[in-house]
Amino acid sequence: TPPRNSNAVRDIASVLHPYTDGRAHQKNGPLVITRGEGVRVFDEQGNSYIETVAGLWCASLGFSNERLVEAATRQMRQLPFYHGFTGRSHEPQIELAEMLLERAPAPMSKVFFANSGSEANDSAIKMIWYFNNATGRPQKKKIIARIKGYHGVTLAAASLTGLPANHKLFDLPIAGIHHVSTPHHYHGANEGESEEDFATCLADELEEVILREGPDTVAAFFAEPIMGAGGVIVPPATYFEKVQEVLRRHDVLFVADEVICGFGRTGEYWGSQAFGIQPDILTCAKALSSSFLPISAVMVNERVFEGLADGSESVGTFGHGFTYSGHPVPAAVAVETLKIYDEMNLVAHVQSVAPALQDGLRQRFGDHPLVGEVRGRGLIAAVELVEDKAARRNFDPARKIAPRLSKIAESHGLIMRFLPGDGIAFSPPLIITEAEIHDMLDRFGRALDELQVQLRRESLAAV
Ligand code: PMP
Image: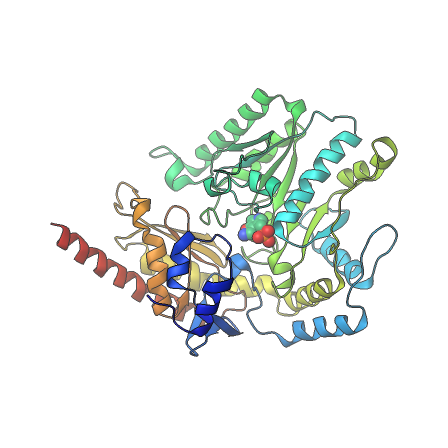
């Protein structure tokens, strides 16, 4: 397809996009989005699309919200920038930190601010290393994450990320970062194995890695409650319970990466609450400000804070912080976002509309020949495409089936995101209504049927 319009041509000439796909983008050009309203975005020709994956980018309150615009404007007039370095602070970051501590899923003591999920996770790693240095255990440095976990793209966060695209060619992971298996029952469990038994195997594997490396060298375990970008993988029953038993036994800190799951996505305020996780450290971003402005946060519990605070005596200042840590404008937008979540009764709203998504996907597409698994919880879900349903076999990745479906879906008025392993994600703004969910699934159904017709035609042509 040739570039659609003049802005697409300008884009090809000038923009280097994230996760750029080499020359393909240069040939085809982008869909240029010009405005948004509620759960929808509009292109230059005025075509409208439901943003089904806003939740992975996380415009949780949708694409138009006057209160957030006003919060930013008010703050820009009042104090457009201030920093938080050595003895200075400002109201928006203080208020936001207090609100986060009040809402935390486990007792937390302090909040550190950064600008993105990657920076939050990098900051957490440095805090953990500093904490163990400050508490006289400098060798306790290694970190365990999971294959298909996603934690960002800066060099330390990319090392935690367990997806090959983040490691190949970049000499990653950095030293001391290990990955354990993905908690995906559908592909990972043995025939007939229960979720609970699969979870026991995974916890055993984690303990083996800790014992092999030496518990006095293992500092922390990073996990998303539900893996997002790696495929929307919901952990098997009892998984986090068993994992936490292992971590406590060996004094390994639990870092919950709530960058996607935080703020209602799973039908609880935090993903940690949905799965009984009691984190020592929690990172969040995205829905923290409804993505209207960049801001992220790292919450640490009292024990970690005490170590950080005492460290300046023994090992020197914790020399880490960004120019825009706690920037007042995104902080003010985040404060307003959290207020709106309270007023809309976020968790109750997600719980009330989630069945339309979760049951709707399972009932409508669970038996579809191209659908291997429908999975998810709350307002996050994925449909995994398979070539052989009985054998749970995916298509040859070279055929790029999920990207193709997402392209077809675009012509049916949906912006969709494909995931590794031929998953298609559903993670709409949290303000979505039941009627909009039905509309989204109708459109998806038409796109899926169109893909099926195309594949049938192709296989007939091949005989
Ligand atoms: N953690 C998780 C769970 C994420 O989904 C993401 C982003 N997709 C990140 C961290 C990284 O966030 P950012 O892109 O803001 O650096």
